[in-house]
Image 1 (cartoon, helix red, strand yellow):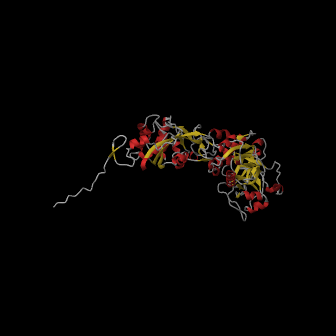
Image 2 (cartoon, rainbow, N blue to C red; image 1 turned 180 degrees about the horizontal axis):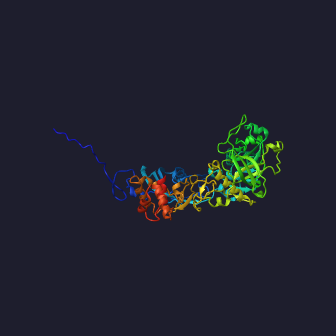
Image 3 (cartoon, rainbow, N blue to C red; image 1 turned 135 degrees about the vertical axis):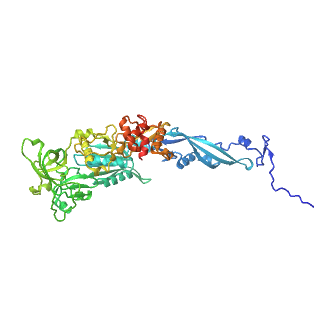
Length: 592
């Protein structure tokens, strides 16, 4: 007897759709998917086009009922915001998946692809995919409205310095720009003796006050005024004012210390010269080269004033100069400056050249002065000094002349200055005609003092050509290695802005202006093989249609830059590239 074995593989039976008669697998509705979708739309009631508000000023989106949030394009935060706009209709279905569909950044449109499921006829579950368009509408938020009104503020910082020169303010301005402390200000107003910073919140003002205390020696007082109050909800509206006072000492001021303070600083002489004002006051004794730093708390405990203002500077000519080799130091003396050299000089005023009257003094500029040089200084012997500490000193302890700095031709220095600084956008009123001269003094201080330059962003001025140093008279200059390239903004083929960020210049790009294109960095991974010359030629071909290109017009300069960047000789470079075909972004990539 034989047994018949049945096959275990059984195909399920098929039925005909009750609508169109197509064979389908059995389902609770007994209808094919096409017919079911034609009869039932599970996305019905969900809007296919929604508007969303966006503030151009602060780059924030509006989240009902009254919140503005910061979101990036195609970010999770922005996706959550878009889904909340259709939260009520989505509650009737099951959301399976959601994601962005790419759109042009400037199209003012956001597309979100949704996948939903819903139970329909007789327990059948239908899944559908559709796209919701979000129209981005421009709307100014309340905070930006108050900023544009220019009459709303919650806190103000009044920075003041009781001096005739603004060197400290110019230095402070560059520090604010470097660290971006001006970004939260509503407006900045300049007055004759200081600056006013207006803020929309007290917290931003307090942060600025802490920054000022870390950068310049100062002290402050805080006060507030009640504007309105609500006794039912126990809320109060105040306006806060911070009064910041900077020490009244600037660079190149001659000061007279109190005997107690001079003794605590290492028995240095009372007559000193201020060589720098940063977070502390840096003083030097022109008779012994002894240096000392005085912070803000020490100054306010033992205050002192400047003996002469900058307008009293007189020009002297050096008749004789000798270096002091052996200097006897007293007991308990402080630190000696290594950057200066003590010298004994005989000087004569340029206004008294028809006389034989000369002055003898010691100076800390012995390493700079030679017979015949011009130097600026204060004539203490022929001026009225109204200071309590000077009046108590012996007359033989007060020098006749205090030399401050060596004098150079200002016109020539301005003409060859190939760098510039950025300025704060501020309101100016009651401007003094002497501000331009004071600003030029600050620029000269940057050239002469390397310690101050380290805290300042210096940008190369491409409008001024680079001059050779053959006709230099010894005036200090800022090297190209210390300069940054300014920010250039252009548009690429898609209309997007392309930015080139500031970078340090090098010797190989002295006479060129770099317009950095981000496409160079993206293509760097593709240039993996070949010699330097092959990679350079490939980069030139790839970047031929990019924006921001600058070609070197001078043939000799082209060959020099080419030889410096890729190590070719003049003959090789002239054969490899045609005239005016040097693409600066390509060689900037090679140097980096």
